[in-house]
Length: 221
Picture 1 (cartoon, rainbow, N blue to C red):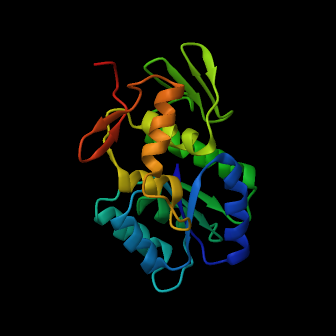
Picture 2: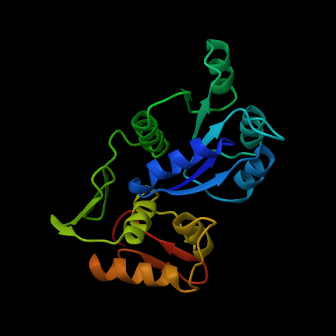
């Protein structure tokens, strides 16, 4: 899952990124509201953690601008503004959840998990598709009842496919979702990960859409 963290406090941002890393999120970080709005319009994220007190554009303006542009990504607002009026304004502007500073990291992670479940229409965090069962909480995968050992990148890729069965992902989108902005990526990295998933699961677990990318079908064709 790719998360956009928009927070101009470097120590807080570093702490959040450190806390989310073991959860196998790809976290991209911005400190500027204008850059955040531009990124939301151009790129694909699974969720956004958004501070309200930002330079150039405040978080509320970023949120309103993203929603006007049709960006439907779930947004968790972080702010020191703990008044009821501020929370109502944030929710009315399009926020999906609201967490006031200071906060416990475990609560942030729990709210983020719940946000992602709701955005995917799921009551449970467990994902199932074509005999594959993926549990994001324990990072365990089984196929037809047998446990399957996957690498960190393979787990992340599988979670993306299983969260959106039937959706065709371009190679560029998958590269962004897996690696974000900060890593150098081999040109065939996605192909290698898909090959490994097929080998460890089954041959048509992920289908190639020629000239476009990859998809996990909702049911066997």
